[in-house]
Length: 279
Image 1: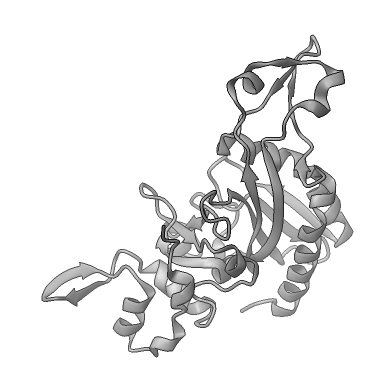
Image 2: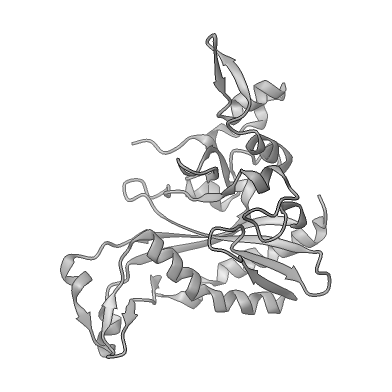
């Protein structure tokens, strides 16, 4: 791996930065954004819809990312297009060959099992992941990055009732508007350390995350014992390699099967992390 020393330093900076973010956007552990305002100074409550919440969180945090990058001697480039990877590219001012990919990810706790969250995607395992020199849907080729990180936010949702959701508020009433998300956890981790061995969405080639919050915060993903190279190889071949199971051909779909196929020790798997929540 290239620039390992710089990656370690950047990771420590990013983790420290993540631990401070609750101070910037919360009050009493509730989100300080309560609605949006029109030119007549009417305030409308926002929805707890995850897409709306995610975008507003990104906008709320971005000035702090800029300050953070400047403080450690980096510039930030935003992804050129909406669906490109990563959200943020950190480029060292002194050596512009040193780049780090940082994706912003938000998810919410499972209301019935609050030690788990809904999970999130960790980028594609398609063209740019397989062909590390590709520029398709990525800001710079995958190989140009010295590290790939997730800066994540886990929160609890509060669904507003119809009256709260449709009521108009004045400027003086802004603090009385209920916060739609509360109880934040911010974290930063290398994406391979919090990856699962399952896809993150049904229709696109995305890598899924683990879902147990404790394991996310400790970087205890499916590949934590195996390392980044096996994570890369597994996901580059996900859905492609075929194995024989019960006399029938099937596509390899778990890290346990991958290790058997490669003839590697079974104890490289982290089966605890691969288990999804059960009801």
